[in-house]
Length: 251
Image (tube, rainbow, N blue to C red; front, side):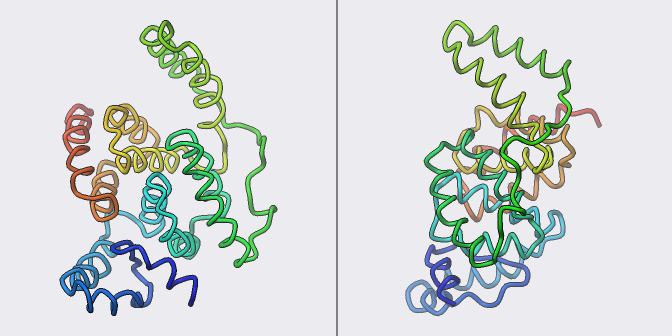
């Protein structure tokens, strides 16, 4: 109970299609009864039950947003919820590793401290975590060569180190790690970009997500989920980008 109570101390960050009534609802009722009503009726009663995105995917989206925003108070609850919703420990581990590159090492370190305790409480051991150096997925040589060429032409004269690490570490290593599917890796990345207000990168990564198997309907639902966890302004900043990507895709 202490774990759940601590997790709910971050207002507005409670949700599960199957979770019990959050204990913070009593506190909300005493301070902000309208927020308690919205939490009960909209967030818990509707958003997490919408059919366009599975509870597992909603957990991935929400965790990515929390990690990207370093909202560690709510993380224990949502880590447990993600595991209950079918997200594997190795997938959580890979999402944290992935977000070190997309949200910063500090945010990943903060998430590791929380996840370590959750994993220990659930007796999740090293055998359920990904290898440090696994056999990588096959590289799409043509697509990667095109990406590397475009990025190199744009930025090699400005920051050759960034360009080199983008090729060697991100796209020829990180994105090929097998314990988080490319589709889910894209879902983590897109969610973190929106959570951080980084819309300049969103078009490219949303297109990658759609090529990796995320559907437009699922991307739309991810935006709806994120509105409640990262705020309407961040999502409305992302909507024009998503609209442009959707309209330009072959029908």
